[in-house]
Image (cartoon, rainbow, N blue to C red; front, side, top):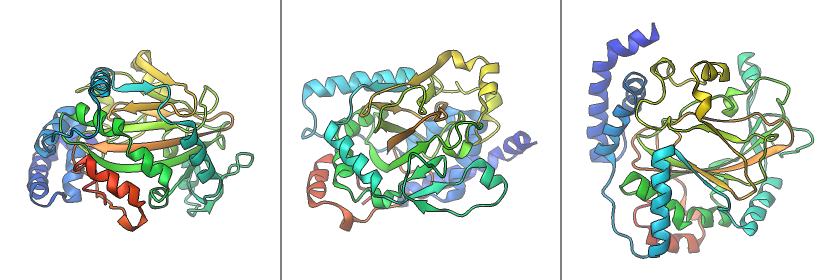
Length: 340
């Protein structure tokens, strides 16, 4: 019934997306209803919808000679090509030890927001609690760092200024990249004897906040089979590689058994890595975090877009930024223009 509704209303959704594109061209934001229409059209027609919207909203790539040496530039091109082919690229060592240590120290002194579990939401019996993370006595599956608090820290600002993030994204989009979001979370072993928690992204799903983007997922502690390695189904970022039978169900989490039934697990990649390793991923492809059976996983996530068409764009306060960051960011062209 839901699918028939999507198909029946798709001509209206096309008109609403066109209206949203006109608004975006003029004001660089779009009405929320045009974003919802993009979603519904994706459920039916797949990546062809987002690819068209991306072409119409992406901004022409601008030359930037200050950032990258020719050698690194060529390596970043190879990385972007591999992401285009597989949907991901794995870095063994993306962050330095001093950066990792600084982030770990930040997590020890911060009151995280606890994301309610599936069970709590089902029972309508929860409040958003804030507390320090105690690995011996976890109180939730997912502990989330507020982005406005996170962006204040110099180590985070320095990481965002990593030229690889800018340049790989630019080469992957073949257009100007724009910084969107940075997040930090801790996934605990709170539900190690339970089913995967969908609110903690432990079931397969695709993301679709924008027409095109990349996520830089960075392990802050060592991650092995026991503490929630990230998983991705290779190739599902490509046009119509998410089966219609799953895509047409909408923006939902998919149980592992359903993935196995249609033999998608043959292309499943599970990423184990030392602290500082990173997965660069086009998360329109199917992905998830595995259950943490023992210990915890700390993950830093950075998102870069080809445009800001999609969900509402929230901006950060320049007053919270280090002067060094502000000065350096000017050499990144328009990378930060929609966020600060």
